[in-house]
Length: 349
Image 1 (cartoon, rainbow, N blue to C red):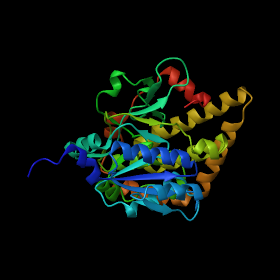
Image 2 (image 1 turned 180 degrees about the vertical axis):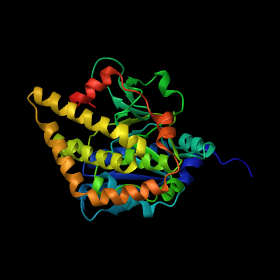
Image 3 (image 1 turned 90 degrees about the horizontal axis):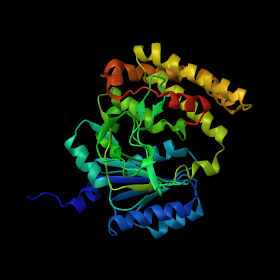
Image 4 (image 1 turned 45 degrees about the vertical axis):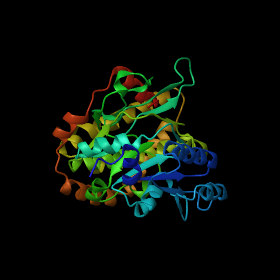
């Protein structure tokens, strides 16, 4: 038999999950661009209404009958909504797509072909662009995969560089792929044992999954593709204030580091992370702002309440890992620059 036509590769091998919390106009635009990219014959697509019965989202689903429509019983956030969609996905690759993504062409075929030739690639992102609201090119890179730093935080090569930048042209290993358009190998999800923790709600869930997958020997990659456009944080920023975002982000990050880091990470990375957080609090207090103090205090208090879950989760993850911290850090850790360190302390990253 001949090689499968390129236009059919993604259509037959990818399940696309789009989670929507209101903002029906974004969801409609996303689905319309997906239809156009695949000339009307879209891959298996699951649309999840995370607003527990939003009439406008239901109207969008009615206009795109090829997409399976799933309604959450209550708002669970990005994590729970994607978990809910998994049983409806029947393909070997699962793409998680934010509803504020706009497709220009099909990016999934390139991702599937790359993952087919790299059997240890468990997750990958393509080329994602965000709008430039300042002078210069109209579109800039939304990063080319995140790399771990010695402080346990991420640095994102290519962030806000021109779309034509050399870094966007070559595939590269990374610590975590962007959740805005993330493709996962079903076998990796099954091997890791779960996708996201429901209680993460939103933010850091894809990074935590990537860390757990890397511990099992999988790899994360940035892969050059036809660019997609991303309206950065268009949904969550509209329905949650910065304080809520910060609290959840730092709680989730602490949970992930506490459960995923091995001995070396606990001795060096975790203390460095807490030191960076303390520096952020001090810097913000000197500027007359208390949001960092309140966010970190809430996150630490939540970790104390969850200490039993942390212990049980850590025991499970560490008993199943087959990649040590030293080997992992060598592959996906990059040092902070002084500029990045200062930005993190100020709370700008």
